[in-house]
Image (tube, rainbow, N blue to C red; front, side):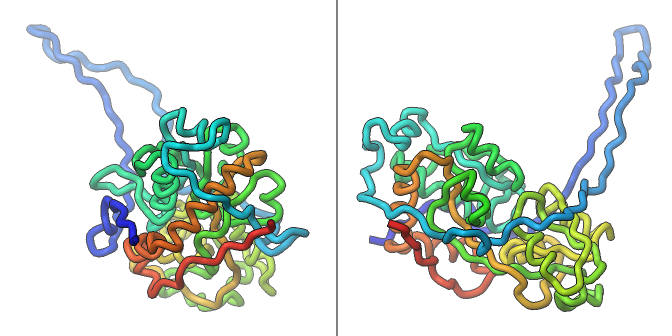
Length: 335
């Protein structure tokens, strides 16, 4: 039976997201009865630099396909327990006992994980995938605590047990598998280039010597280092900062996965996605090592939403701007 999931919104008004940074300075003006106006003492306030913080990346990460493993191979799921009836002693039972599923997500990537300015709620494709896992655990998709983490903090958040799972455009790679485990792939992406429409940049070959922004902690720098003519690769803390850097002329281009770039174009129609595919991404749920039963459980949820049409429903609600659905990726199992 096709499951209908509650989606808080279908996107912003006509797909447009307003990105604004509001810097507010306040001073207290105290008035005493019959004594006139008291002038407040001068205080020292540090200046705020409105430009995104960029750092040069000089070493490429290992690509998704590099290494001596199959980065997408994952544990085969067993029977999916009924919600609220997790096997005693399992990591799923521990999560249920805590009352909420803690998930590390993004709040700055339109379409996948972003904050709706009218409701203050986090929404997107990744958020809905996380809610389906909460539904399977508790029978309630709202039994979830969404914690905003940067791309660079995804692995530390799992290691330090600050979250139970990471659902944040997290590509499975052999390098990352040394530190965390992954579910099966729930979305496949391709990497391209974002530029201003009048930039003159049209292909990867045009990036030689140009400044290109990526998000720190992602695999996006890898394909840029493989180009015949190397660009200068600069890392920001999130994709919205990359867009701001491009708007302000700090960089000449942004390179990331197609769905991320489509979300940036929705925020600024003066931008365009150009060039050939230069890389790929395979998004999976990140899970702390040593929890094979939790890996199998998450894979069971992914199999369920593939089979009952929920994955397609989420795609239609969240990612229709990307075009016709490619369908959910197949999961590859190693046992």
